[in-house]
Image 1 (cartoon, rainbow, N blue to C red):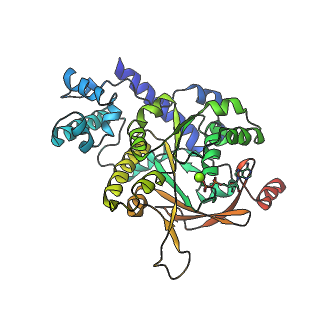
Image 2: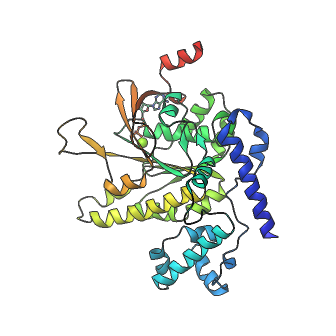
Image 3: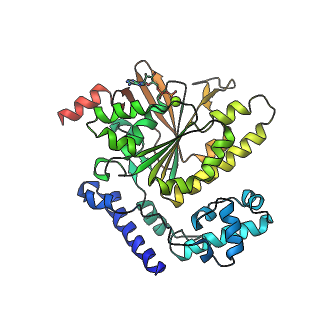
Length: 368
Ligand SMILES: Nc1ncnc2c1ncn2[C@@H]1O[C@H](COP(=O)(O)OP(=O)(O)O)[C@@H](O)[C@H]1O
Ligand SMILES: [Mg+2]
């Protein structure tokens, strides 16, 4: 019975992916939106995992691990502490959960040939940023199965991009969105629902439904943030979110661990959190957008003496890194690090519509 449901969902996933990744213009939009988000696999029970009986299942539930997916993305180190077991048996549970997902065709096999990897990439979706120029830089928008990092100085437009993305994600696939909810994790207290309202209204969208599609969580300290990230899988399901924003990923850790001589500890905790985020992005087929601050790098003799904060830990976690700079009224975005985007930069601006194109871009579009 459960098996049948799975295969049905997988078929739906294929259908949705085929529609959305290839030609968004052939949208049968209403159909798309009425379908469940394909990666929600609540059909599997944690006790379906070989080797997990009622006692272990209870321990896992007590530790907040409610689904096979939660277990598959857990870290052995943390889990062993939470369920009071050896690290080896915690790791064995995690591997068994991943194996069950693989057997149910819900997770990639350990090794796949490149043609199958390409197929998987086709299930990747893209959400528009609200600016054609920024979308071009990103080769079509922010992607699922990846972590996209925007970093830059205060006022460079990071939070504006996040606000606009949430509005766009709520829009149907045919309009460049995900037709989904989003999650906004706000660590700097800069999320403004009024701004969401303004962006929606000036784009001619229904502000009430846009506001309803965004789940906001204000986070006060680094442990709180780690806790939210730990339970993120559940929230992604609850809010049917295809976009998760963390604005910013580093501010709390940076402030709390400043000058304490505990940089290694901070980096280790950031690392744990980021790995979880990457696994979530891949397994749930969601987009994760994180923002990051800059720090001055006095050893730079040429060029811009600022670089992204967080060191290698963050650098390795982000699939794509985009550096934002203010230049007068406008902003410049530069693709810094990407496995396949060409090196390039572009200009955009911030208006009542949120992230927007410069006048020339807008008028040349109109002229077309
Ligand atoms: N309603 C608005 N209309 C036009 N520009 C705005 C509006 N709200 C914010 N901005 C612009 O966005 C800037 C703040 O950008 P923000 O994304 O919050 O910076 P940060 O990179 O620090 O997150 C402001 O300085 C302003 O230039
Ligand atoms: Mg900000």
